Amino acid sequence: MDSVLPQGNGARRNEDIALDLLKFVAPTAGVGRGSAPSTGFVAGGAPKPEDQVTQLLELYARCLRVVEGKPA
View 1 (tube, rainbow, N blue to C red):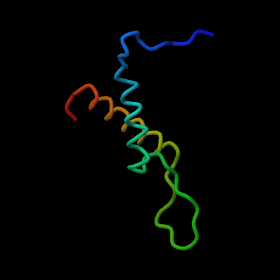
View 2 (view 1 turned 120 degrees about the vertical axis):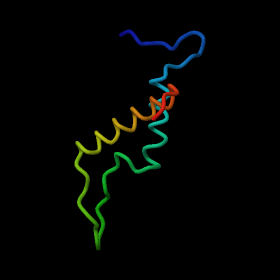
View 3 (view 1 turned 90 degrees about the horizontal axis):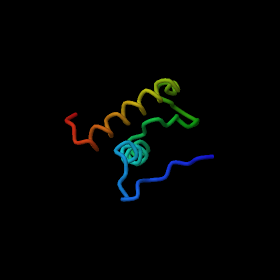
């Protein structure tokens, strides 16, 4: 099995940096996280998996634009 090795100069691709940024930002912002079952009052229903995926993809695209230095 062939594996992709990083560049010899230690440079990272923008996509990798954006993914790391996404991994940091998503839990902090509560993006892509389902609601935990709880007793008592629950406001609204749990987000659908499709909505969570859409939010994560939008956040990744936003992270990538930031890493590339493009305006939002």
